[in-house]
Length: 80
Image 1 (cartoon, rainbow, N blue to C red):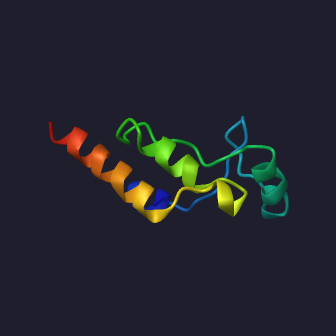
Image 2: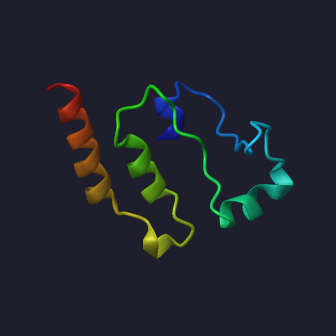
């Protein structure tokens, strides 16, 4: 979903200085809570939906009906 809304940008983690996180450090970075950055052009709630998809534990991730419902809400809000 991130790639779609960033128009095909590579999903590369950036540290607090904006530097690429080395692939060897990616898992540790994800475990510590680091995630891909939000794009300033995205609709308000979109990034929150993505974060729910990126939970480390599969049982904590939202299911497809939840994702679809929330994406439909975001789209509807954009057309008001």
